[in-house]
Image 1 (cartoon, rainbow, N blue to C red):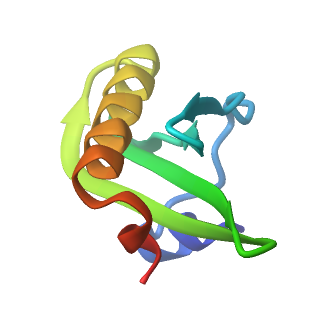
Image 2 (image 1 turned 180 degrees about the horizontal axis):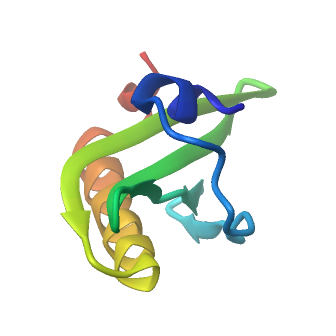
Length: 91
């Protein structure tokens, strides 16, 4: 079970893992979490720094109706975080 699932107390996702989007040298994996009949915006952001893969879990309070919409919004929020914070998200 992923850290995200344990934190939110949800069951493992039944949706396949999305392919990452490359953005400014980061890999963004949209990983929306099923929350009742809706989807919570969440993503994993990764980047190789100094020969080591660093990760950041983005979890938002926002929920939307569809999985596709949640993936799209998760990517948008992750890109925004990268633009604002860059590699400092890994600290």
